[in-house]
Length: 82
Image (cartoon, rainbow, N blue to C red; front, side):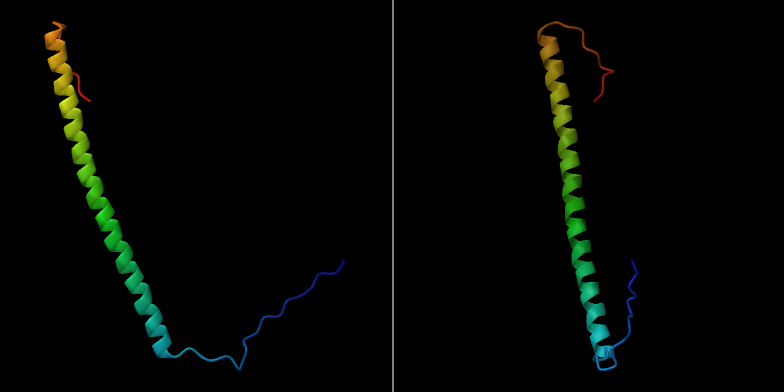
């Protein structure tokens, strides 16, 4: 069995890219990058808010647990953290 060769060459009749076409591509890339950065910022900001709500929820749960333990006269362990 014989291996086949592939010859790659530049087509001399192909249109050349001008400086304008390259500039448009660079601007499009920068625009997409800016949109991606803005979306990432929004997601990170909302995650920070969710983290704070989680802390508040854990604090409320701990307070509720302490209230329940006081009502049932069980010893309360203040050192426990979540």
